[in-house]
Every structure is written in structure tokens, then in C-alpha cells.
Length: 489
Image 1 (cartoon, rainbow, N blue to C red):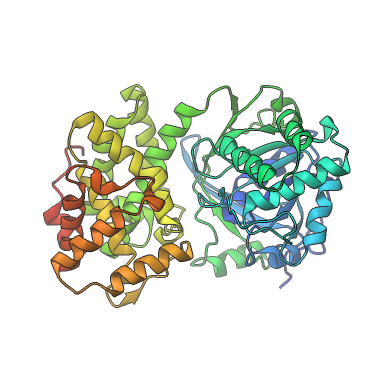
Image 2: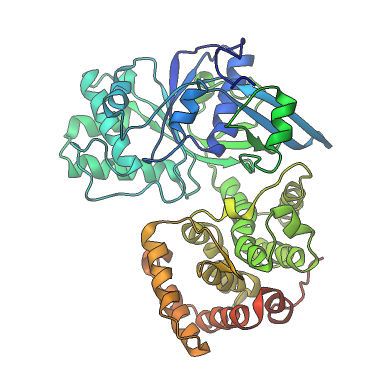
């Protein structure tokens, strides 16, 4: 059987490289690249994507072996009906690994047609690494790599104001465009890149904050044999996503002229203020994902749909959303409830096997950005602790023990976080008192949470009691006995 590449795919087209993309994972390919492919099909955008692999290990070789081609399956509710469809996405021109192809990476700065920069390097990706140097080949951080490239472009084009970029990060952190720009300016100062470069950064480049929304389960490992038979070719990069998509870009309206997504019929909004869209989505959809993952997984459930359909776990998640998250949001209740109803419908997508383990990547930083704001706001609004959110934090600590019964959990997070939890759990003496001390140490990690959570009245005891219940009687019993039945059904 033929492998998908430009020899076997006769409709293959090479586009001029207009978009530089940091991140080659499932989400970017099922969301951003699909939209660029759609714009190429339906408008005169005519843009190719050159992808940069942000880490040493990634999919660069696999993508290049398929000439940037891959099959996207979109499955879910479309216009009120369940629809399953697929197409080959053709817009990625090549993928570079800057750790082995640094010169080629830096040469991208010389391309006058390059206009857009997009990224998704996870919540942990937009971070300042003080050890990064301009002379590194490459820098360890994504913003460090980007700063070096921007400086090279500034020098190559002699500060030409028309050679700046429209920069649209997709990382799920608040004000992602502003945060990325702050880190780049920090490197400009650290590396003494000069006032001319800083002026060019500010005046020639447009940093947009953005919000992305599409559930992307990724590679369909359970059904790939049937999919391969259906397709008639081998594709090692098949990616599955839901039908729903939304991209909110905060920036000037003229962006729509250069990025004609709306003209292509895509659900892309260019707005003056994305805050209401972001808060609603991150707190309800992403917050529910992150909170349910350790609870459902330790219960013995593997997918989102199974979790929502389950009597106990489903009731927990629904109560978490309607009774604890929604009361913290400053938007009309009707609008929030309607959005939550749609989210639960998406979670139950009959076509999507969305594995909880795929959501669990970097769960600590995800809880900080997605769950913790709701927890703290609930305390402020209600004057008491939100029971479900507190229990989900207990479950998260239990999850980072790395065991589900006899099975080892393949935890995926920053090395310092994994080492910290391994040390804490390795030193646990098996007592309830020991669990209380362990909880206090986790909550005290201001580098993870941005504050000492032991200072939240009642939270240390509440989280410790949940952890003691999970460890003592198991998640099933803990959920039944420790967490009250929901008010919402």
C-alpha cells in the first residue's frame, strides 16, 4: 500500500511560504493548518506553512516523509446532524528541526513573503529562560528561538517596517500575544539588541492575543486499521477533530484583508476584546476537561465521552460546570448555560475517542490556568470552598502518584514537576498525617500556582481529606461518599 506523499497524492500543490508555525502536533494540524488549507481552496490566500518543531523530539521527520500531507477526519455535530468527513490537508511545505537544522531555521528570516507566525507550544511554552543566549544554536525556549529569528530578520532587511509579522500565538494562557511579546522584549534587553530592534518590534509587528476552540483527540490508534483500509493509502499522521471550531483573534480589523478566513466561511472572529470569549471557554470547556481527567481516569475511565455518560462521574462533571464554574463568570446566565450545554454535547461526540491521557499533558500548569481561577473566584463570590473543584485538585495530586491500581500512569509534564511529585510520593510514610503534609507541600508550590494555596481558608484540609479518601478507599468509593450529589441534573 502506498504511503501518502506528493508522489501518491496527485492533487499535491506547493505554496509559497507565508506562515511560520511553531508546533507540529495534532492540534495545530487539525485547526490552524486546516484553516489555511481551506483558505487556499476558497480564497486567493495562496499560502504555505513552514513548520518548526519546538522541541528536540517531534514529528519533523514523519511530516517530511509525507511531504507535509496528512488526512484530517472531522467528526461530530454539524448543522444539527452527526457528520463524519475527511480530506487530505495540503499546505505544509516542510518541517524543520532547529536542533539539527539551525542554519535552515535562521534562513527563514530572509524570506520576504513570510508574513504570519503562529504557535502552540503548550501552556508551558511561553516562558523566559534566563540561560538562553543569542549565540545558542538554538535557544532552549520557544520565545528565545523566535527572538533570535526576529533579530536576524530586522538585521537582514535593515529594519524595513514592511517586513514585520502578524504574530498569533494559540497557547492557552491569558493574553498569550501580550505575554509572548513581553518575553521577547525581555530577551531584547538581556541580549542588548538595541533600541532600533525594539522600535521595529513594536512598530512593524502586530502581536495578537487569540483564543482557539476545537477538540482534537489526535491520532485514532484504536481504528487506524479500518481507516487505512478506507483510505487506500498509509498515513502515519492521520488526525481526528470535531466539527466545531472557533478562533477569536484580538487585533486590528485590517488583519481580515490579509487573512481571509471569514471569506472562506470559517468561524474566525477578529475582535477588539477577546476577554469574554476566552474566560467562558477556558473556564467551562478547558476547566471541565482538566478537572475531570484525574477523577475519571483514576475511576477507571479512559475517554471523555465515557466520563460524561457515567452516572457518578458524569454527575460530578455536570455539577462542577453548572454549580461551581458558571457562578464565577460575569456573563448572562442564559448565555453561559447555553454554552455549557453545547460543551457537554461536544464531549458526547459519538465519533470521537478523546482520551483522558491526551488531556493530561502538563496538567499542573493547566489546572493553574483553567481550574484555579474558578476555585478562587468561587471562594470570593460564595464565601465557601467549591467542593468539586477542591476534590479535582485532590485527584490531581493522586494522579501524579503515577499509579492506577497495578497500572503505571505515563505522566507527561516538565521534569522538575515530575521529579517533585516522585520525591513527595516516594517519601510518603503511608499515613493520613503524611498525606496532609504532602498536600501542604504541593499547595505551597508558588512556582506552580502563582501563590501559596495553603493560605486559602479551609483548602488544605479539604484537599487533604479528598486525597486521604482516594488513597484509603479508592476513587469509586471516594466519589460516592466524599462528594455530595449535585444540585444540577
